[in-house]
Length: 68
Image (cartoon, rainbow, N blue to C red):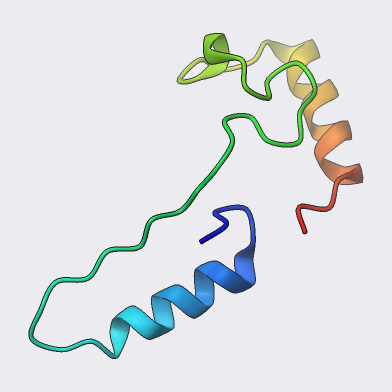
C-alpha cells in the first residue's frame, strides 16, 4: 500500500483484522521525510531530530502539503 495514504492504511488494517488463523502482513511503501524539502530522501534525518529552526520549517511545509 501507499504508506502515506491514510485511507489505504485504514483499509489494509480493516482487511487484516478479518483474517483468522494465519499471520498477515501489510507492506507500506513510504519515502523517508516525505513532504519536508530538506528531509525527503535524506538519510541524515533518519532517526535524527531536527533543530528548532528545522522543526519550524518542517512544520510549515507539512501544513501546506497533501499526500494524496
